Length: 194
Image (cartoon, rainbow, N blue to C red):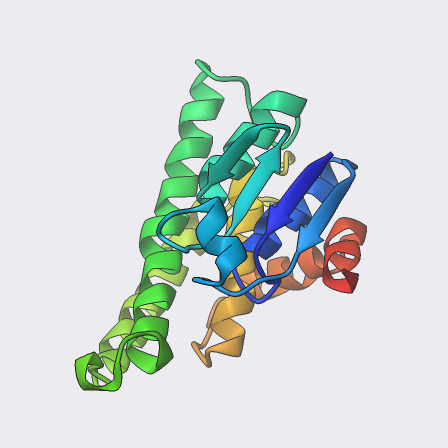
């Protein structure tokens, strides 16, 4: 059985959602970054981590990729053009949404107060809006790659929910509707309930 280490108000939620989509049993150790449990799983203290038997894996995207490949779901096969496109969209979401939101969080409450630059948020909101437009153009619908849901969708939907909570506007009706559909998935609801 898998163990997900990390609180649900973090990228650990992506891993829990993935496991629910895969219909895999898991336990959840809800801890904050840098807690003793997080440090035991990852010397940096970052979350999430995934325990699979004796193996301990870190980084939400690496974990999602591992689970998708292991279970043969929510991914295209390695070595295919579709997988390369999936990886491209995944990295686009990470670079253009996740990184922008993470930078905003760092300058809001993560960094020591004397290291924060609150004025950076206006620039980040502009960049996020531009990047949302690009993602909307790439989306083939109903999922990012068309008819097949992939790990890119889990990451993108998580970022869209994060953006909403962080008060970053999503001016694409297409992506607002997409986020709503993704939140209505049974697996998403089961992960939220845990």
